[in-house]
Length: 113
Length: 112
Image 1: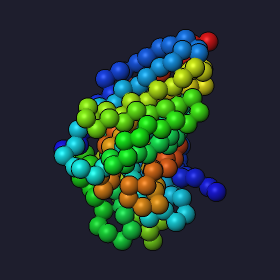
Image 2: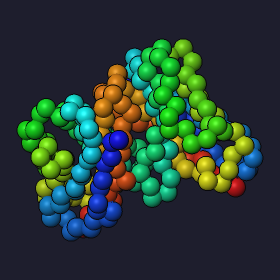
Image 3: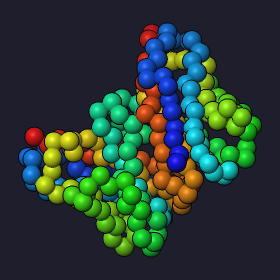
Image 4: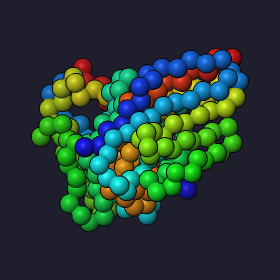
């Protein structure tokens, strides 16, 4: 079956512009996660959706970051007024339920110039 | 707070050598899960194993084996007879009611 799909695979944007990153999770997976991986760094948790519960936004680094998940499926991560320090690979993952193994997408490489 | 430490930033071995990747974790929970993921040069994270805190049995899967010791809060990963295809960044992670907390990863280079 299809894995987690992320688009675009690469995004170059100018400082100050807004960007939207998309994630299509595996069908039937109730949990969806966004992580960020900066060059040479580990994975930094951003936000987590589980079913119809309120999302866990505790990892969002600033109010310029937001995410939504429509219909319990597709998710969009939005970064407003991008800064150079936002440059990273943004990874989406889904799982059947909490504590199940995460299945990751290939990520979106964001470069802010 | 939960924390995962992978003290080895980079390891380089010659093909066919055995190599152990260390993982030490911190948690106050008595029930939790531990994971290992592999990130090859292509970039996609691949799930390798999940172990719950009540199961301290070591596990072997082909050339891979995992040693879980609660007494030392460690969950180490050994690759036997390493191959060039094992070259990747390996992440250890901890979870209790999600989301996963990852270590910073160990970059393994296997040289032919």
